[in-house]
Image (cartoon, rainbow, N blue to C red; front, side):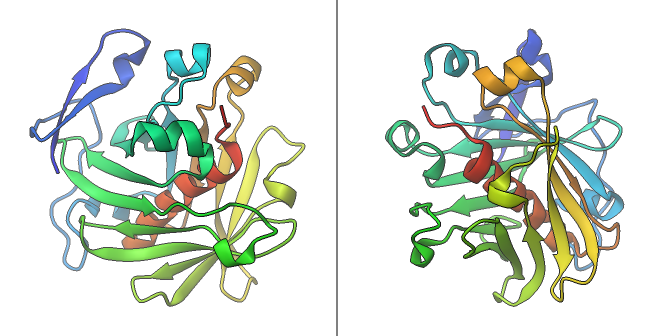
Length: 253
């Protein structure tokens, strides 16, 4: 999938209008290195970063009248440069009736409008009382080529996830705070080795200010991981961030 991205000129000057089906080129963003052997095409840039910021767009109509719209995100590097854009795809009925438990496909595009990552979440009941309906998410890069999964582990109080490769072999764990929240402004989900001995990174829900937190569900997340982490797992961590957002921080209208 390709897309043309246009600046809209307002507060959303940093947010593009995305029209699928037309290839385009964007200036001002981070430049990806040339092709790297063994690296899925489009993920080359992830080989040279150890942290990312995911910033969700504030939807004015959603904030004012509670009409749930497709989420849109910008992925930035540590210097604030735009690296990728992400847009949610599903139907209006799912958004209005299923709220944060809805199924979705998130398309992640590079600065040239080329889709490089596809993230898919099926519709499942979300309750600690139903361990047979745990959340899961598939990450593909390039689209059609699965690179890993994020699978929820049952726990009565704390969020726990397993990150696997394309063969569903466990690679990493993600553990969150009690019931997915914290008394601190930022909420951290730790990325751990499978033996839970070493913490190698974290996914952080960042405080965005009282008004934005109360009246919108537009969230900011930071992801930290080792520079030498397999680039496929870095892509899966981006998917994990979206799953955590929907499960614990996406409000229901």
